[in-house]
Length: 214
Image (cartoon, rainbow, N blue to C red):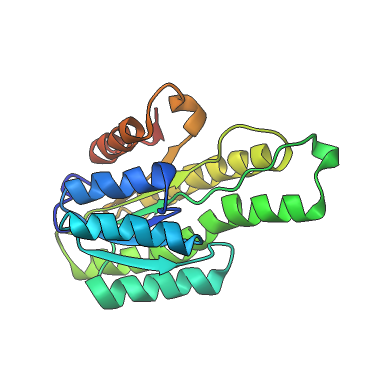
């Protein structure tokens, strides 16, 4: 994906931190934004700041653990902007503790957010993006999955699964010969960089078609 201006970016976990910087960078590049997060107040503040800067923004409260919420997000993006070019699956949850000390609720929260949130995004948005590519000869698309920060127990399990999912997605997209690529961002690979620097690095990697963002 070489060109960003006028294209549509869907970013989950967009209310703060790295997700907010992804949105800021995308807006600076002239992209139209679909922002999703479970924190309604923080999402509204982020969206308002971007709107004040002149960006086109659709903000939706979305729980990526729920497939129906991600489907609604995709539908809203298509209704508002009639296409999606960039998907950033960025929502992550974290819990600390020794593997055997984590409760069932801890495992479910981390795996449902960090892994199933990415799975839902890939399953729902990839066919939509493939359809956009069929309708637009000049289409360029990209999917970025954020693997959770290296940690203990459930967090590490989810991280490894997202890495494997991203590798398989990239291979599958190459098999069907479409103008859509995939990348994975592992936050521990860029711990010495600020969030704005990581966001810029990510968009440079998208432009270059780099799989591992470092």
